[in-house]
Length: 320
Ligand code: DHB
Image (cartoon, rainbow, N blue to C red; front, side, top):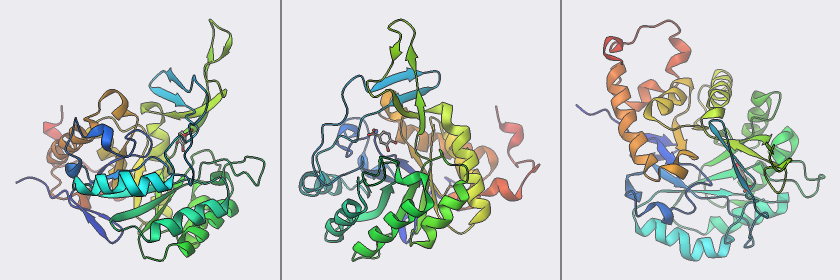
């Protein structure tokens, strides 16, 4: 019998735990020629800001071993276009939508949350805390528990619905659990772990930084072990808090690893760049991986590694 893949995004039920992570699938339209949007657990939109933005100058992408560096600079159409054009399109395709929001000030996050309050069909809001805080010398909100928790409090207070709020944290902190605690204390219902790592590459041929903005965010398989560690630590501290795990998931086995660490949902991001059907493939592979370990329900594997150090899975003999 096929495994029961139904998953929970806070109070919302999703058909499966595989999400398109923020940033790599736009607002979903780009994926529709490759996959059935309705089959993806949910589409997390690229981070929406109040105004349209073109983003940073090129080059803003660079490849690194097992990773992708990017400094896109949060390009996007702005909240009005998202609400008028992208959200209705996603819903018309039967998609479930998590809206990622990004602001340069706490006020901007509040304004975005207010706008989303009136929008039907939003399954959850994900707060991208990795934006430079315009009021604090450009330091990202995600680096200080006080800054991050202030954003969460304003978003929660500005949403006039009980739509679940997930705070997306940066791994670039010494204590991810302290950051998680601050966001949960301010009203986050769940956490997204992890955003990109701040990184840099230099082109030895041109002798210049590979990206126009010098620094960028590292994503892809290179960061998966960091994601596993962060998810593990937060799950140990807050076993009942839902976690959207993201970071270098390319295969069903990678997705299973994040679930075993404690994520209840798994986002596929950078893998979409060279395989636009990655969400469907990862879901199919995850079902196969679950059969191998003899798991009948997604709910049974979430955080399983915490109680099972040294356990021999039922289906281990069949594992290639
Ligand atoms: C950008 C923002 C992010 O939060 C991220 O994870 C990667 C890139 C950006 O648009 O620059």
